[in-house]
Amino acid sequence: MTFEESVEDLSVDVASLGFDLAALIAQRKIVIDHVRVNRHEIEETGEYDLEGLFIRLDQAIKSIRAKRVVLDTIEALFAGFSNLGILRMELARLFRWLKDKGVTAVITGERGEGTLTRHGLEEYVSDAVIVLDHRIDDQVSTRRLRIAKYRGSSHGTNEYPFLIGQSGLSVLPITSLGLQHEAPLDRVSTGLSALDAMLGGQGFYRGSSIILSGGAGTGKSSLAAHFVDAACRRGERCVFFLFEESPSQYMRNMRSIGIDLEGWVKGGFLHFHAARPALLGLEQHLVAMHREIEEVRPAVVVVDPINDLMAVGNMTAVKATLLRLIDYLKTSQITALFSSLTAGDAHEQTTDLGISSLMDTWILLRAVEERGQRHRGLYVLKSRGMPHSNTVSRYTLSDHGVQLGRPSRPRTVKRTPR
Amino acid sequence: MTRAARKGPTQWNLRLYVAGQTPKGITAFANLKKLCEEHLGGNYSIEVIDLLKKPQLASGDQILAIPTLVRRLPSPMKKIIGDLSNTERVLVGLDLVRKR
Image (tube, rainbow over all chains, first blue to last red; front, top):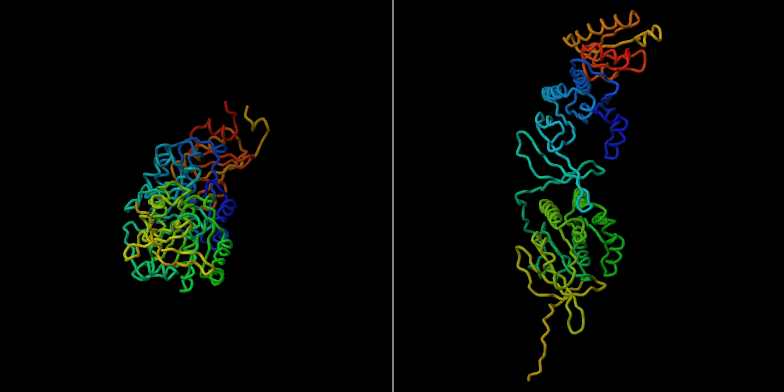
């Protein structure tokens, strides 16, 4: 039962959310009664009730044997009738009546000042109250949802962001509150046998989260390409989130070091998802990533780089978001590789501290200056649950990809004895 | 002077929506009947619609409140809800007297 929008308006509006209202009406899945309340054409004199509303609802429910009822929005009733005493009584009767009918009813109302609902009545007569809210923090708007009341259930009490997208509404609560995901024992190759060797000889654990951090030009994206390439060779599907480059630019660059990813894209193994971070709020990114992962059901996910996501929100929000993403990936046993650009060489550990605790394996890429030359060095800072190398291995980017070589030794300075 | 008298005999077409034989509905009908006799002479017709018997008629005139009196003719359409106990307000609602 709609009080504000006509059937035509409603059909057009929800079409953009992926609902075909006209077809649903034709299939007799839904019946819409547009109730117009116009105070100007109504004169009130003496006692009345809203039996007409009940009769109309009853008729609509009976006509298609409805199980769900939506009233959008009862504010219109308050606007249309002036006798608040009657209205309050009739609303309380309506809620009871709907319950007796055995239908699940969603009733929308406006939020009041200091109370959950404007008239302070609806929240008491209903079984569950969901509070929707729209806020703007740091120029990014986020819609949030909270279950304020749900009789007979131990509901979550937090606010959860939600998104209205092309396929309706998406909410992402923290999925596993108890950190109870399975820890797989099998390993996946990093794509480089030398790096596998540094990680106890077998590479990453499946379903683990890996962070690759390093300064500009240290080859983070190249290592990621190796990892993805190896996964595709194993016949696994990958989702690659690019936040800085377009897929074609990335593939061109990787081709220059001898990794051809285009074939995997064509073969349906590799799915790129490129977006400007500033385009959406953090939450929207998370939802978009979720959707992509749900769709492709990959074994491997790469995010290159996560810094851009961090730029979108504040550190707490980013950490919470990443936590939820990692949580989700772990529960789905998806191996995830995140690259992270560090500003300088000196602070590479501190800058990532905020999120490194969420990661199982942390690989540092750094430039090492030696005898007037700039070498690249790779170092496994941590890797949970496996013996790993403690050496800084030198590597080069060649046209056959990343060549990981012998460990670079600290230069011994010759001193002339005095 | 009432408008009806000014314009000469106009045919009044009134509809009273009720839901069963409720006290409010019966009061409303009695009040309406009395009022019409006093102010409209014989130039009126009252159609009582019981929505319990004909629920499909509720949406046509956008009926929510019961009882509702609808003035179908003369146009424009007017609605008065309640048991019509306040004659003064009913007359205003029906445009029979100007609001003072």
